[in-house]
Image 1 (cartoon, rainbow, N blue to C red):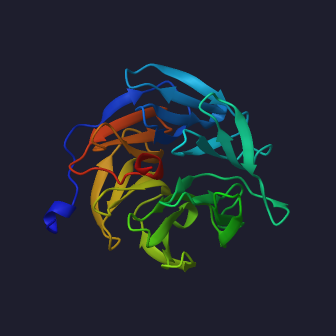
Image 2 (cartoon, rainbow, N blue to C red):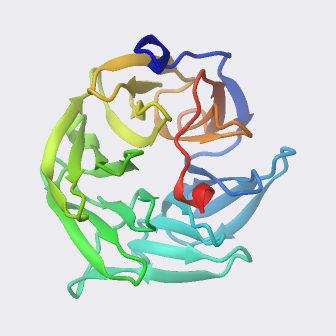
Length: 287
């Protein structure tokens, strides 16, 4: 792959997929092509089938934000609601079970976003009620047996999470500082300290994130009405304007994974756009 071919291109207009919501976030696809996303103000997780039918899949009663699918069909939900403030598991039949709610006997703040690595380890952000003035946000990973490891703390609203395709690092959006952090992962699985991968331009800050197959990082830029695309060096190579300023998250979908789906709160809608290269396959798609 040449240097130029590694830079993604937009190959369609931004199209409306679904609307009529007030707080969409957390797009994720299952193996059957169903799109799941949350509407956090109504505590709802919505399912949109490939033929366009949309219905509430389940209601957590809390503040669901991020979603991640497991290969067995279980939906993992980052929920910031005070009755959950952690990670839930939802069966394909819609049965909710709390999984992670505390660390060392203390309640989690409230989880926001999450992603599996290639080994089924779940990385998630824990930002609820954190800010620049109150930097209590945390960053964790949970092993399949439920063992929980704190990777970082003292963060000003940690948000979107993405794991590099080669497993060499995990990336974390720190919204209030308008930057993306990088944590190296060693061959033995240890996670190193944070470093600043990139600082975004403009207002607001980074929200949800996803990688493509060439290692470019797609970032929902809350407050700027766009998706920022950074190359593996952290340089901006593309900006994708989205209707509405408050873009919350992104996910690759479609049969060839070359369609980027985007959630946005100001217009209460889900959008999509075709790109020149596919998204990085997630854990649920590789097992």
